[in-house]
Length: 235
Image (cartoon, rainbow, N blue to C red):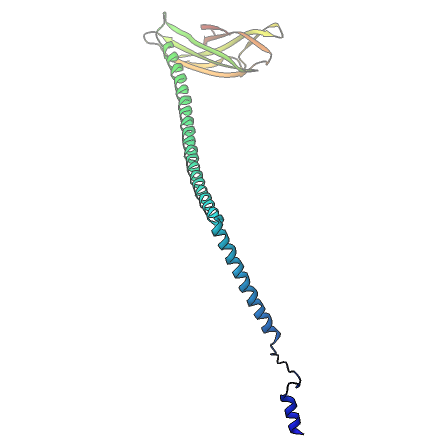
């Protein structure tokens, strides 16, 4: 019986047997991934080889190199332009500062010039005049603003040995107010005056805003009220 079974298995009519290897599914997925990666690497290598053969990659590299060179040049040009702009701005600031200093010096020189002219005019008035006694010279008056008059006058005493003079000075104004004749004397009355050789007096006082001044007359009187000198100024 055993021999029959053994012969049946060894004969052609024996049943077929299939031998399969059993692999875990994680190992199967890993092997599949390796195969796919290898295939993708081969495809990418073939693509790069095709580009190099066709000359496409070489042209792109040249274009990239050219663009990089242009970008570098533009950056250098931008840096130079910024440097020039900063330098120009600094020069402009320095020029403005110099102009401001020059303008300030011009204003200062102009003020000094006016002061010297005023002093020159004052000392010219101190030159000896004909006659002796108290003299009134250099009367100046101007309307600084509506309702205000500013005045200045120089009183001199000439002679070989002039003594001290004590008296008063006063101003009298004539003009128009609303088209009608108008007169006015200095508010507060005559002001005290004391000098030996000369005295320069100035001041200001209020007057009607609508007044139109035509003439300003200055008078110097002694302690007894006698008029010693007069001068009239037309405006």
